[in-house]
Length: 447
Image (tube, rainbow, N blue to C red; front, side, top):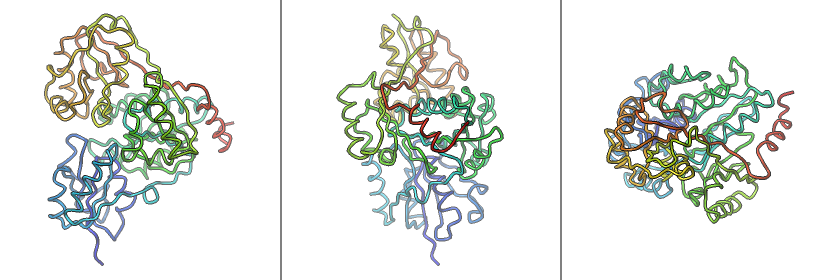
């Protein structure tokens, strides 16, 4: 029987999951390659034999997405599977045009073939774009569940940028575990807030085995939280699905893959950041929710911002360092650091671009919309060094750190700095506490 030759088009996340759940042991297909985008330095590696399984004794090569057309010819590819997220619809179809022009079929796998079923109740938390405030929503939901003395185990959308075989299953219970697993800054930004609050978080590559490990965690497990990444939809079947929307980017909830999927399948839609967004944009987002998912419960929320030391901002020339992915493929032009600079009366913003070095120069060249913000790119050791040198070269009085982790823990900063913190605060009702109280009763959780 002819086996179809497949390329999976991805970014070190959904692509590996789709392979593991649908293709790994499927004799109808032969995955000849992965292509990689968005993530630096992931191409020119291999998906290892230990993960690829017995049908792939040499593993599977990973190439840059730039080579997609020639790879289709070289490997006589029948079908290309698109498997990453936070992408404009027009860009998805642009890739489809490349695939179809070379004679191959273009496929998007849905939830039926990729979602896994848990033995525990699952709450999924996703977002329609990177940077909507999903992580603060996850923290809020976990805190409410822990108030009921429930054992909450979070599973984070994958960020496997290192040795894939070693990263098959990762468990984080302490800040020291972040160092043990050689986490990048982006990984630390997602994992550290969880362990600081006393709950366990898992991540890695093989999400079937990760789910079973989480369900049987040695510290106990009552509820699984799917902590989504980018705007991907959940890897796990959800008993309660939450999606977060950003009125700073109205309309994006209907124009990016796979954010609209998450919105259409959500039970709860949270419109975040209403304290800093245009009321007309908030109304537009609300109308879009009601139009495509009229059964979703809508919650409005503020992203409450506090700073450790406002004196470091007031009247100063400040360099603002923001969460990297939110600014790059999230396409945001501001973050919590900029809002803090405005609210606490900074004298001016320092433009980091004249001081950028190394890979940060490439970042600014690739994402020209960023402007007078410094994205905290920390996928690897060199990017961290470039970030440190850029910050320390910049002509500013002080630094505002708008990232979820304290950057001073991983780089040396030669100027006064203050951290910005942001937490979800619902406005009015309904709210998460009442909804989660009903969820706890329905699933007979706790005492």
